[in-house]
Image (cartoon, rainbow, N blue to C red; front, top):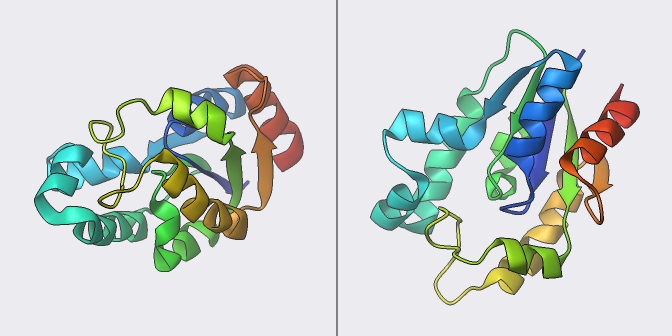
Length: 165
């Protein structure tokens, strides 16, 4: 059994869905954002504030490249993981990549305070800007796209389980 890598916009539920999916499928779970925080001993927002967007993306890439699994694992990435071609290439080596698709309208409701969440956002960018910028990247790396429209996390987990294995 391969790993399952979850990608998608910030606040798309990658971690929440990842934990449930791992339990249902009897897999390990790894949250890439927590890998970064553990390596850096800082919150994501603090890292971004200290080293800026480009510095954070380097830190994130190093963390993604450090991920090694011995057992089938559900890996929840940060929303900005798709900016790293090397990192995503590494994760895709032994995984199915599932893109959790959320609408722009839903994303705007979920991301009310973008800075405090530790979201990678360039100066002057808003939710709509990151949505337009990242959408083609998610589509590029995905093996499977799951629309979240009108679904509970449990519905999404069931759909992933049916499609991936």
